[in-house]
Each structure stands twice: as C-alpha cells, then as structure tokens.
Image (tube, rainbow, N blue to C red; front, side, top):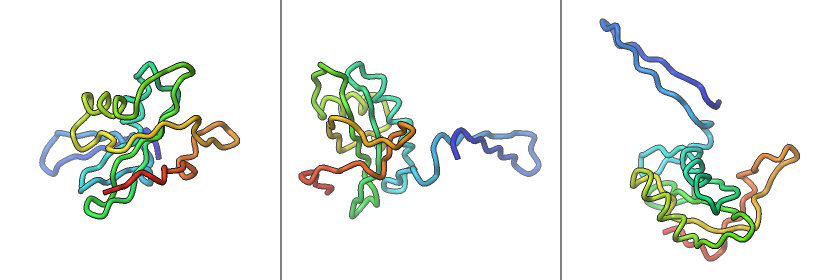
Length: 130
C-alpha cells in the first residue's frame, strides 16, 4: 500500500482528519515506539547533491526494537562521508527519525525492473547496532 489515504470522522462532529500513508506497512521502522517512514528519510537523502541512490532500512536494536539505517550510493566523483550525510539528514528531520547508521556502497541491489531490493542490502560487518 503506497500513497493511500485514510479519513477519520469523530462522532457528533463534522470535522474530518485525513492521514496519508506514504510507505508500505511492512517497510515502516518502529524505533522506540515512534514510526519512521523510510521513504521520508530517503527523500531527504536524495536532495543532497552527492547522493545517487539511497535506501533506508530498520536494523535490529535490543532496546528500541529497530534503529534507522541508510545505505547510500554516491554520484561519480562525489566526496562526502557517512557522518556528513547523517548530519545533513539530522538537521532536516525530527530527532528520532535520522539514521544513526549510514554506510556508503558502490551500488544498491536491484531487481529485474530496476527497483532497489531492500531485503538484499548487505549491512557492513563492522556496523555495531547498540
């Protein structure tokens, strides 16, 4: 389900609230009870001029349930560190949403149609999820 909309009307009221679902339910990251939509964070990453591709995934975390992680492929000739990308996103989203773990990859795995396959992303061995 992507781009869906849900309307809620309160009993005895003419007011209606609309909530847009921007990602598939299975792609949601629940970090310490807060919901993070990977697509929202990916859109911020794509705004950076050095980023060619980005995929945001949930990483297992013993206390929070999941932690936000991002695999990023850079444009040819771009020079930026994972820490700089993390700080870039941190400055633009709520404190619970920014990826605590960012790693640079040569390319992201894709299926036959060219869509990024998040399930095939390799998390670096040295990435310690605390």
